[in-house]
Each structure stands twice: as structure tokens, then as C-alpha cells.
Amino acid sequence: MYLIVALSAIIAPFIFLVAFRFPATKGMTWSAFIVIGLAMAIWGVEGKLIASSVLQGIHKTLTILWILFGALVLLNTLRKTGAVDRINQGFQNISTDMRVQVIIVAFLFGSLIEGAAGFGTPAMVTGPLMIALGFRPLAAATTALIADSTAVAFGAVGTPVAVGLSTLPEAGPAFFQEIGKTITTIDIFAGTFIPFTLVVIMTVFFGKAKGLKDAWPMLPWTLLIGIVYTSSALLYAVVFGQEFIAILASLTALIVATITAKKGWLLPKKTWQDALQEDFHPEKKKSDMGLFAAWSPYVIVVVLLLMTRIIPWLAQFTKTAIDFSWTNILGIEGITSNWEFLYSPGTILAVAAIVSVFLHRKGFSVFISAANQSFLTMKTTAISLIATLAMVHVFTNSGINVHDLASMPQYIAESFANSLGAVWFLVAPFVGELGSFITGSATVSTLTFAPIQHSVANQVGMDANAVLAAQIVGAGAGNMICVHNVVAASAVVGLSGKEGDIIRKTLLPAILYGLVIGLATYFIF
Image (tube, rainbow, N blue to C red):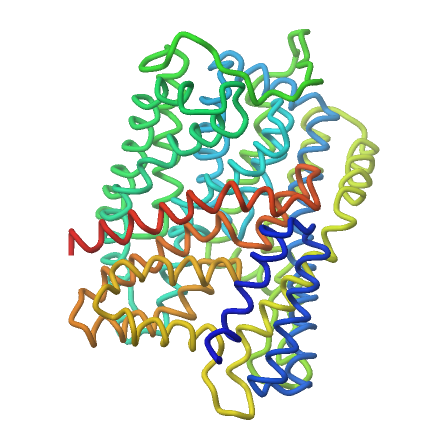
């Protein structure tokens, strides 16, 4: 019975969002009530901890809404300054094929943002950008989420590795580099195929033919881009360590993708635009704005993100100057929600939006108008996120209870370990996915489950580094189906209420990713 109760945080959202097709506002509210009720009645979690966890969820919602606002206000500002039209024309010069554009924008540019910022930011940035390029909202949200997977292991300058594994006895730079090499080795067998997976999702769900006919001609080029990304990631892991793998690998593949796409190498002659919005009419008049000027706000975003994360004094300043973090909520030690305002990607995105107004020689009223438009888009998202994150934090904090039970996530992992230890290489990635699905963070998933993964590996005589690497890669794959990422991604493309439709499309790629990683780990190690 305890296992079913622990799994309620997974079962309830799937029933309400995927099976019943409830909007997240309704489905996640019901899920939260069920999980909280079971936590109190069966798990022995007391009312004060429930209240503290709910407040933690509300506070965490504000931090995500701020990132959401930053992504939206930047895009809306760039639409009003004409930069988006110029960016669109730049893509037309590279390729008018939407199968190519989804790789460049969602996978490669998204991976660059992931490497610098992490924490769900890429889908919030690339989803709206693809909408501006003419993608249908459902196609933009779905592909943005699937694309934000391979780079997640090294997101936010290597945080899932450095922080996620920080509680283990071996933790240290040499250990982190070794894990980075192991991750990139096994991910060659899965991450390489993410570009082709994105094309398959586009043609199967959004193509007129609704099948693989329009996907197969893209296989050679997508494999080239995938191999360039994953093989260069392995090289950078060996040479530099885990911090800059996602950034350098995405830049390397971006250069190769741009050159080959512009020359049409390995690409089919026929252009595919089936996922185009019916009423989309790109600006025909050639823009006077330079391409670098149009992209400069995004360049500013990447540069500021990197500076605030790798320059020690600047990182310290942005983390402490304006700190809205809430520590030991209601006096319960360890129940904390961080919001370092200047360090937040939301602040950096908003700053880039303000700077773009002056760069593009427009009045400040353009930013005000864009901000108002962005706030209106986010109205219903807050309810979904509060319900989701309240449930998440009750689930993760459930280790504080009167029955002296392990927390729900630990109970699930230990139950799996007892029955599936012999095939743990195959299970390890799905434990990582489970953690990300619930918490929305590969870092938190790894912090939660790394000690269990480490212990199981040692008990059954498996390579502990390989198991931990599978955990982290699986946690990245879990980003595709993570409820609060889906809620945020659907909100930025104007699809609030359609979260179940998105998860139905991202679920199979997430499962296949975990399966391939498990098999690769099993056969290599």
C-alpha cells in the first residue's frame, strides 16, 4: 500500500492530464489534493509541514513565473522592434525547411541556453521563438521540450553533476570529470538521435502525410548534427571537465548545422513546411536591421548568464545583492526556496529586453507594451504551477513524518532496488526520469536519488560511475515530461490547458531515451 501512496504523485497527474485530458489548472489541483491527503492520512505528514511545503511551492512558483515573464517580454519586445522579422529572414537564408529550423532553434540554440541557464529556461525561450518563426503552437511546445534533454546533464554550467552528486563521498573535480566522460560516452547512443527524433515528431504529428515518409530523407543530416554534438561533447568532457560541455558542443554543432544547411549538404531538395501556422505571413519587405543587431539581445542573454556563473565576484554579487529566498519556512529546518533575483535567468532576459529597445532605437513604451502583453499571457499559469509545486514539495519533504518512513521518492527507489537490483543498469535512467518528472529538475532528481543509485550499484557489484551517469542522463530525459516544464512551455506558446496533449507526444521519446541509455550502459559497462 505504501508504494501505491508514494506513486500517487506520478499516477494522479497521468490520469488527469493524459487519460482524462484535464487542463493543468484542474488536473494538477486534483492531483495536489490527492497527494496531500494521502501524505497526511497514510504517510503521517503533519499539518505544519504540509503548510510549509505548500508555501515553498508558492514561492517557487514566483521564481518560475519570473523566468517565464522574462522569456515572454524579450520575445514580445523583439517582435515590436522588428528584430523577429529580421531573425526570420536570416533563417530563410539558411533554410526555409521547418525540419532544419527545429534542429537549429530547439535543439542547438536551446542546448546553448541550457548550458548557460538550465532550470527549464530553454523551452521558455525557444518555444515562443519558434512561434514567431511560424511554427504551430503545439509543434513549438512539443519540440522545445523534447530538444531540452541531451544538454540537461550539463545545464547551468554543469550543475546537475557538480551539485547533484555533491553529497557523495567521492565528490570533487576529478570525480565530476570522470562522470562527465561517462555521461557523454553513453549518450552517444541516445543523444545522437534526438535531432532525428524531433524531425519524426514534426512529420508524424504535424505533417500532412502523418508518417515517416518526410522524416527519412532528413536522417543523414540529422545524424551528422547529432554525432557532431555528442562526439564533441565527449571531447570537451575529456579536455575541460563538465562545466562547459553543453555550451561548447552546441556551438560546435551550430556552426556545422548552419554551414551544411546553407549549402544544402545531405538535405532533401523538397522543402517541408507542413507545421506552419495557417494564418502566418512572414514579413516580405527586407528588414533594414542587421542580423547581428537582431540576434544581439540573445547574445547578451548568453553572455550575461555565463558571466554571472563563472566570474566569482559577479556570481557572489548577483546571488546576494537582492535575495528573495525564504529559509526554514514556518520554522521547519531545510524547507527552503531560493530566489536570488539578479542571478535569475528571468532578470537577465528582462534586462536584455530593455537593452534591445535602445539597441534597436525604439521608445521605452515598446517595452511597457510588451510587458503588459506578457503578464496577460501568464494569468492562468500561476494556478497550475502553484498546484504542481505544492504537490511536488509535499512529495519530496514527506520524509519528515510521524511514522518514521523514508520520503516518498526514496521509498519508491528503495522498493525498485529491492526487486530490480539485478537489472539496475536498465532501471537507473528511469529513476532519473521519475525524479525530473516530479521535481522538474535534473539537479534535484540527482540530489534525491544519487545516494540510492550509488548504494544499489555497490551492493550488486555494478560500475557505480556508470549507474550515476545513467541517473543524470535519465534525469535530462525526464525534462520532456516534467509537469511544471510542460505547464510553462504551454503557457509561453498560448496553449494553457493543453498540457495533456503535449505530454502524450513527449512521453514516448522520453521512454525510448531512457531505454536506449539503459541498454547502452548495460552493454558498455
